[in-house]
Image (cartoon, rainbow over all chains, first blue to last red; front, side):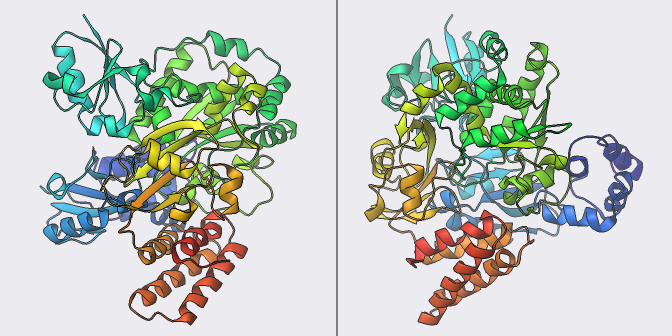
Amino acid sequence: MENDSAIRELASACVGQTGAPLTALRRIMAAHGHIADGHVGIVADVFNLSRADVRGIVSFYSDFSTTPRGRRHIRICQAEACQAVGCRGLTREVSAALGLGLGETSEDLAASLEGVYCLGLCASGPSAMVNERIIAHATCEDLLP
Amino acid sequence: MSRALVPNETLANALGANEFARELDARGHEVIRSGGFGLAWLEPMLVIDGQAYGPVRDLDALEEVALGPVDEIPAIARQRRIVFDRCGRGDPMDYDPTWLLDQLRRPPREIIAEVRVSGLRGRGGAGFPAHIKWQTVHDTPAPQKYIVVNADEGDSGTFADRLIMEGDPFRLIEGMLLAGHAIGADKGIVYLRSEYPLAARIFAQAIAKARELGLLGNFEMELFIGAGAYICGEETSLLESLEGKRGEVRTKPPVPAVAGLFGQPTLVHNVISLCSVPGILRMGGAAYAEIGVGPSTGSMTFQLAGNIQRGGLYELPFGLSIRELVEDWGGGTRSGRPFGAVQVGGPLGAYLFEEDLDTPLTYEATAKLGAGIGHGGLVVFDDTVDRLQQAHFAFAFCAHESCGKCTPCRIGAVRGKETVEALAAGEYTEDKIAVIAELCDVMEEASLCQMGGMTPIPVRSALGIGK
């Protein structure tokens, strides 16, 4: 899915659907891992929007990233229910071990750390995700490689 | 051969349910992937030939976690499960459409009348009487009317929408089709947050099944996945997002019931509001109105979360006290330390303390405290809770999630956050408190939506600043 024609095809397949630009961007994220500069122009073109409109959408939603995420993408819930069971401490621990702050990706793209607001496991926190895997009662060991 | 119900539910799966299902299958059991019962501390909870076991850690040591017959578990038997009556009891795709098809032959005005008599109010946070929205959409002439389901369940401490969509998606489909029939809408879209991938898979499967059963007729049903923005839980922001734009809130009026999605009359409801409708029609609006207290009628799907021993979903009539929920149902803090605070109704809800615990959980009583019942989530903290830190988070969260359209919210949240930081750094002066109080006033009075308008609630309650 690296080349522009594949991205264009992917975006074009969404034309006519409800909320199509968002769905197209989500599919680009899934296929490519991030939304590159060139993709913005393609999406703008396919949906007859300005580049500024598309950049506006990309920057608004936290699921869209303009830079690649780490191969091990760690997300730790930062919301109240997880705060009540120690997510702040857990985040500090993981952050120190990885040498990454929230929202940062390691230079070699091995890992990235991100905060998330609620995974819906609020009675069994702290909750976290490593790539697609959802973790309840998360500990530092669960999250580190 | 025995019949084993193994929940296919995000929490249960995170705790090993998938592996247990495979293992039971290999051992020759008839394995059915059901919904979860919502008793988080017992997950994964398996039901084998009617006998419940949980939390299961080892299939060879089931007797150590035997709970007896599933219907005799007090935490289930003592609930009043109207929305969740089917959830957990079998394969959610195993659906008998007879009742629904009968109901869809009733005259629309009769269905709206039942909803009116039931006193149903929105379960998403605002608590607005449902029938007024239904009647408005019904009465507004338009070429296209929509039902939009708000499944952008972003409040920390809430998971009812997720549980019902994973465990009984047909309950939501029933609610949508009944509402569509009543108000004359033939298109329904569910806006589901992207953090719920399993709910998305199961609900998409249920839509396909409904189509196969011939339930949809000419009703178009669609599932839309959000992109990680809390503000999209606000109804006008959600509509903007569905139109493929930034989720910036709209000014009201017009309300969505008059001009919503693509400018057409739109019934926007929270998942649980719509899921309450089948139960109302089953028992009759009048019988439903008998449940609960005063104008807070029916059952609420309370969700007990945070630092709590027996957290989970408890569907109960309105009116029990916060203390009963936290202490009797929840068993107090998980850490074993003394109770510290409870935030009622999500990130825009109030922090309540020991002296408030006897407040009954109704729309009216919580409003009197300047709180709100929200989507029914309660987040418990033990006595290590740091009030200043929680006030800081309320502002920081608002700054992070604000759509940026109106100034009080966009700038107020940032200034509030900075001011609390100054307080925390030891610059504790009366004038800093005065600045925060004034910011709260401005945000409350002048914000376009409840994000800015209600952020002052957790701030004031955490810091003990009166209005």
